[in-house]
Image (cartoon, rainbow, N blue to C red; front, side):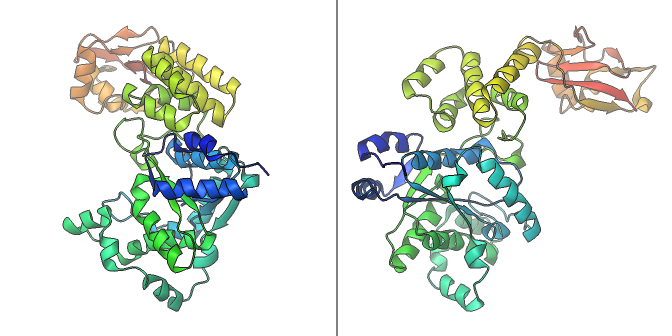
Length: 406
């Protein structure tokens, strides 16, 4: 068993990339007691298997859990196979789609495999909250619900906003924070990890633990990782995510698309680079900082060799503008061609390289649209482009396709 180090050695690591600790004085006191008695804290992290792929946003609290593990504490991962049937309403302005038990179970198996890329599962306590919720009678559910008032539930920002905007709030959604809080009682959590939007559930857990005669847990909350669009939280449904099981080249491509303003948070939340080194990297050229970030992240989930190979390929195909090895195909109906040609702006729109003809016109006017293996620049929006099977089209360096005439 790893010996728990003094508090002054733990705090700098545990507070890195953390937005809020509630209450912080209790956290320090709990760490001091843990060090003094060499008794590991039980650190809870719950995850609902509502999808197949874990992305970098999921790894932010997982990396923090790994830090607790490395310091000698006991990670407790709750696979929310029953909370997933409800769907976390946090940060949602509408009801989540319901999932079946079969979907949840299939996802849970894949989740654990991917979680193993971040945390040493041999030293983790893994439980499913169906172990206790599945055996509850209706009387047990009534007893649990009697511990929470409707006023408490409506104090949540997401529920309050939906009520104000007359968006329906279904009764099963109200059970989610109660279930999440009850998980903490069941595993006797000392600390719970998650995002800042989970504060309500974390505080409700403290109330339920006190009621059960337990020491209330401390909430350690990380900021929300924004996606590659630089604005919204990372999520598969938004198409702005980087999956940890994605091929190395795909991960590198997405990281290189990040807005410069995101770089510091990505370094702080997703790497172990010291703050002074982050400052040095960000003071230099953004491209070099992103390449180093890509190298570190891909190495963590694949290998150093695969990371270097992916970066070399990105430099060759996208950074230097050479023809990519993998090019998506797009269909163009032969019936829409006129003498085997199509106006340039229409062609870029129909192949999906531009969302609209006006966007295509702008790309062409700015000199950023090309066709053919030699990347001939398109000169005008109404230029007649000869369309044949295998024609290569480009918009900028990152959007390209081959045409298939159908």
